[in-house]
Amino acid sequence: SALPEYATMLAVLTAVASFTARGAARNFAKPTQRTIRMLGSGAAPKADEEVLYALGLNVARNLGELKTVLMPEELRIVGKAIQDKLLDEDNKDIDPAAFAPDMQKLLGERQLLAQGAAVEAGKAFLADAAAREGAVQTESGLVYEEVREGTGAQPTADQKVTAHYTGTLADGTIFDSSVARGEPLTFPLGGVIKGWQEGLQMMKVGGKAVLTIPSDLAYGPNGTGPIPGGAVLKFDVELLSVE
Image (cartoon, rainbow, N blue to C red; front, side, top):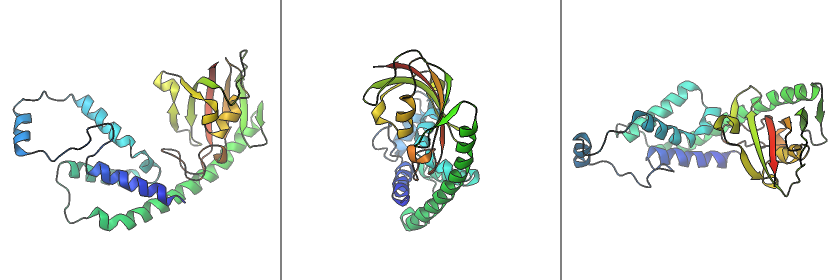
């Protein structure tokens, strides 16, 4: 069921609303008037706006799944509530605990809608990939399309590999990219999704390939982060080394 996952998200929302953010300080107490006066007097250097914006981005990453189930205007309301809570300007008549069942119902229903849309889009996406010239669809459903043949070692599931990759959804949205980060990823091949395990074992070092991966070889019906449940994923992969 998707509901336990969204119950966890509700806990994250509550934590953020209370301004207990992972990666920041453990407990932010409500600033006293003395603290506010000290900050305003110049006792602390003024924070750089880009640093503050980056802090906000880090907090938002904890809520990335909301993008898959809420519309932009709804996300703005959620964002305003978080801002209001942090500034102690929130509506005291609204008790989040009282709305917990409604929030869970909303998020669960929206996830099912997103999952259904992802499944339908994924079927066409996978069929188009399999129909491309040179593409091979394996018994598992994985579509493998070689872009450049490698000349080095061919990995096995018990080895570590280093690869560059870009992952996209059926609508072209990039959800992850080591290329964009400028740093390849090294990982145990046996510890990643099944589509990667199978696809990379078909490659040789130095090679490039496109892997179009069915949902059941990726993140399944629940999805993860910005990846909705039931999504078919496309990865452009370059295998750099095997160890």
